[in-house]
Length: 423
Image (cartoon, rainbow, N blue to C red; front, side, top):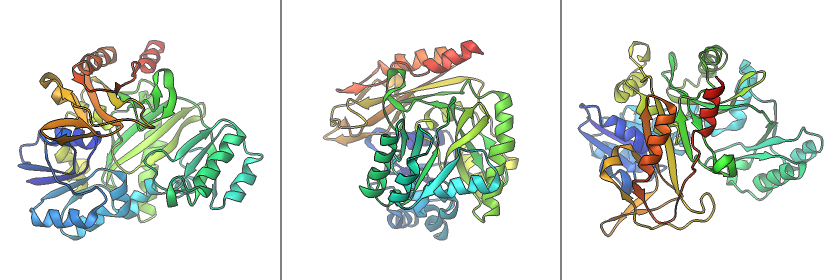
């Protein structure tokens, strides 16, 4: 079978490496992919948002199955267009992808169906939002309604910071039309947990939980990033909490989307906060998380392609989804200066002994050399019997990757290890 994966980051590289294990797949394409994944899939220079060209490529090259991995093409309707052209797809259609595409939609959905989340107000007018902030509880969280490259959420610790967030999003259009509406919501505290799940709209199977490290610097300091590393499973996410989430959040969300005529099929991501009042939803994503995928998929014991096709066919209830009883850690290596200004174009050297454990996000081939081409360059993952061993192995592997300006956190998993000690 010929399979194409839309996207070009570390998440897509992790998906492709897992798909390679299925013998039925005779050819893998990545659209657009990147130089670092060229050994695992043929990279085609078609952008993730260029839906018309994706459809043309699929038809011209006899593609049997397509996987739409990033948020933008899902929200723009890539699955709808490919399906209409007769190409079976993994991923939600446009109507279902709105669960990530609009924060206002998802908050209103949770309110309507009694799914626990932070208290909130919605604004489409900056003046009204600023007036509300005169008396709103502080700290607070200001969110752009639409997609904003993962950067549309601002935690404001003072009233002035909150007002500045409103002005930058709504008046200065920092995120373009994504900020035409905003959500101002209650600031929740507690451990954060990411739970990716497979669902065909009838059955939902959670994957192993994970913990992301969003801040750029050690000790959870510095600016928010797309993610500097992850570990799995998350020690805060106990069996008891998992059961509560299934009953109060996961199944109710799938049922709510069905009731709204927006059946969700694909990977539904739950960003959770474990508060003193129980688990609450911080955000939904309509796709695999990045870099959570880089620790979750290496722990998947079952065949990913079989699961994906079962979701498309609506037969997930008859399909085995099994995870290894192990731990995983991923350390992201970035360009110094990320997430702000950074230089790229440096030679990237990956020792052959660790290539299977490296998921490349930002690299290009130029004049026969692999060069860095982004802020987050790659993720290095290791699995082991214990979390401590997985972390140590991941950092050992980091030592076998080299590029000028390389920067990474030295404390990925440290908080999780402390939590395990307390348990």
